[in-house]
Image (cartoon, rainbow, N blue to C red; front, side):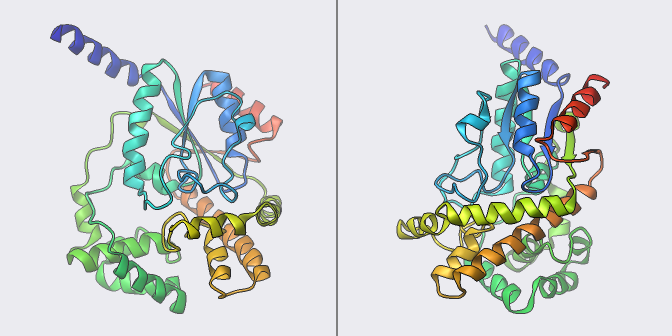
Length: 324
């Protein structure tokens, strides 16, 4: 019996080592969902969500989660997965995504990662070290500094305490800058040094093929602006009110997401509704820029010029895959 189990495990490992894993990434509103679903239908795939907001339950309106109709019968994983009370991390996602990849491949299907959270994808391909739990008081202090003096000011602090870590992040990438500062001030150790203790990448890391959408900037921004307006029209403020009433805090990852953060400021009387809408548009446009910059600085990314829901782009993509 033991021999049979061992043989089965070995055959599964060998099977895994041959099958590609696709990642469809790009900026928000670029049509990743449409392309991912079309790809899954074409090759017999299942989709693993790679978006840090779609992971949360009860966070619906401003997340662009695919509807049942948009899923078109394709299995989707890690969507509506955790409570908005939980500060779910990239490391958490990488562990859960790894399990889903093996489950999907055990069924003989292809795993397709779809989303725009590059940090998640990096955590999957290059595991992080065991980092300390978030100190909410420290995080709030750093967030206050960022709000008062800007993201670049936090970056200057990081350059003083950990130059090596600072070289690996953009000055305005305040999420990663803050995390590096949290590690330093909580442990007294530099993130750049602790990262040397990280685990080895999973066996499938080299099998992940990344395809990034690159739509025209002006058209992308038009989509982003329209989408923000629709979210507010569809009850985003009421959704946030409900979440706060049931105890979800404004400083959680869920309500700190684009759109939700500005609504919280509106509900705290820190800005007008009109200002919340306009600032959300700006936030998401800036986020799209950062997403594009993230993937442009990564190796082995194949760029697809256009929107994922464009039939001509999809035909070119199918031809590209057939020629591999």
